[in-house]
Image (cartoon, rainbow over all chains, first blue to last red; front, top):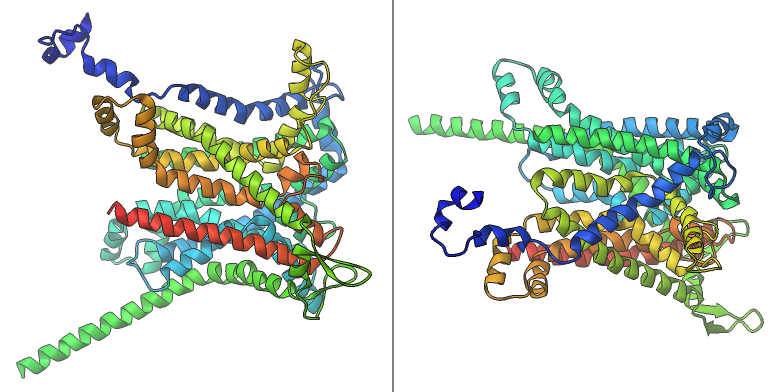
Length: 287
Length: 315
């Protein structure tokens, strides 16, 4: 009844319900698409949900639910191997994130807000190279190359692993920083320069604070990507350099225990928290 | 005189501009150099090592011997008879490659069939709900691939929740052996890379002008005709991008076949990794890696060509 009064134009039409509105509603719909979308969402989350739920199960079985318990978290925490692997994972992720973020920030400053320059396409291609080559190919190439260096110099150590991580973290850190810079216009920096700020002052007081959310977002992505890497680490890591995902893979190969569920849930929770913060930063930028 | 001074001033101005331009260029490359050098030295250069290694002979305990040999590539297609040294065609490795392409292709089609309706559904939602949906679809992607694959393994095992539930309902009385089959790998690949399909599809469907859909309905098109002749053609760039983004990582997958195929159902990724580990034939592993790389690069080039053409067509 309210509808005709809202749209007086349609009062004259013989049709009691405004035809346009009624059709607009289902015009966009395709039969079954909604259902598939909901099934898709369900399928994406159901396995993860099962994994998380059974990590809190007070039973050796990963199938039968008995009682809520943190027993497996305690077991995982007390496990020497897990603790060591976690520490190494965090070290590698922290070091490679710092370097990757610094290099990505510099590269983003050089490639955004400038006129097209010679070699720009090449620069983009090089920066994005780690994303284009299949991970397993990168892994074996890096293994072969590092093998040569290690043999020639006699240098060993976790630095190689950190270097390999830095390489594939750069494009992930670069993307959000570049996106952030592209959204900033040069007027504030020009204003600062007009007020006799030196280039270094402009960068420190204007550019850097403005691009900080992009840098934080890029750093977090790099951290998550490094923390989650399996294939490259599996092949490149030397003895005693087992990261948490590689440790988990080894455990899964040996057999399934609820302890793995507990560690996986912690690692998963960490990634989800970091990525959620990343999305929040991204959304704030737009508003 | 006046002419002369003005021209020299102009020259000086031009000279100053050249200098600032040169300084800007130098600064730009200084800023770019750490990222470029580190990726070129430790990301791109190692690929040439792989190329060289693929033409050497395998060392006894892994590694290579510096002797030129095309055996790695020959081995891909032929078996060398141990007794009379003749070559016999062998499809073992070719079939692993073929299976990988088949599984990756199947996973791409599967992801498209699930991803397209999902992306369309999100694009037709009101703007304020879209971001939440996108977030929900992409979030699992950031969860460690290994953990997601392990989660699938947990539910499709013989003692997994799927079999238990099916047996409880009485539909089956023996667990269905789902794990360690090609189907498990196939499902795992779709699950792993689905977000890669949804995002580009959404990006092109979001720009869809629904007035065109309306116009098609006004011209008595059925729902399916609208989908086929209006929506799908306009989403084509997204479809191509999504398919490439799923196909490439699925082809090189290592973890999914490793865990869900149980090491028996090999894909090319496992074959490569095996050569650098247990069975230790680095040249052969390098050759397999290079063949994989070439397939991936060719599909990327096809995609870039295609999307470039599309872009210019639309102005």
